[in-house]
Amino acid sequence: MPKKFVTKTSSNGGGGKGEFRIELLNSAQKLAWAAFQQHDVLFLLGPAGTGKTFLATAFAIKSLLGRETEKIIMTRPIVESGESLGYLPGDFYEKVNPYMMPIYDCINKLVGIEGTTKEKIMSRTEVAPLAYMRGRTFDNSVCLFDEAQNATMSQLKLFLSRFGENSKLVITGDPKQSDIGRRSALAEVVRRLSDVAGIGVVEFKNNSIVRHPLIGAILDKLEDGESEDK
Image (tube, rainbow, N blue to C red):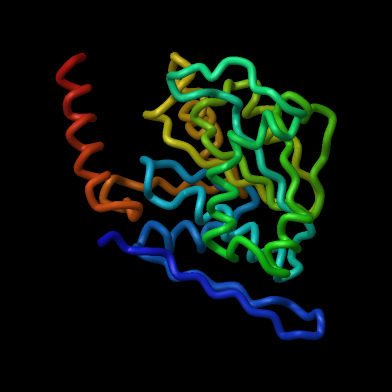
C-alpha cells in the first residue's frame, strides 16, 4: 500500500488561530516545507506523484487558517494533456474548473469535502486565469501556479510580477512533462532566477514519489526509453 498524507485541523473555538498540521513523508517534503517559510517565491520541481501540489496547497491553507494571509489565489495554464476536449459548455467558472480539479482534490484531502473549515477556505479561494491576470496585484495572499511546465515565458513573467504586500508565490511543475509541444519555459525561468535572494528552488526525484510506489519505477523505465530513442 502506498503511504498516505496525514493531516490534522482544529480550531480553538473563539475565532482564534486554527491549527493545521501535516505529516511530511520524506526529506524532500521536509525541505520544501522549510523553504515555504524562508522564501517569498518558491519553485517545486519534480515528477508526478511527489506531492508538489499537495504541499503547496497545504501551505496555503495553513497560512490562511493561521491568519498569516487572507486569500488563496490559484491558477493553471489552460492546456489539455494530448487530447482536445473541444468547446466546453457553461459559464466562465464551469469552463475553467475542470483544470483546477487537482487543487480542489488536495483541498478535499486536507480538510474534508464539507464543514466550516472547508467553507472558510473556499470562500477565500480565488481562481485567477492567466488570461485575466494582467494589471492585478495580489496582497496578503498565497498564490499557487500549478503545472507551470505548460506555461510560456510571458505567462510565467506575468505571474511572477503579480504578488504584492505580504504575499508568497509557489510555482509547481515538472519541466520534463510539458504538454505544449516545445521546451518548457519553466526550466529557463528557474535557471535565471535560482540565485536571486528570496527565491527558493526544491527539486524532487523519482525516489520521492508518494502517490504510489509503482510510479517511480514507471517513470524511470520510460525516461530510460526516451534517452535511448534520442
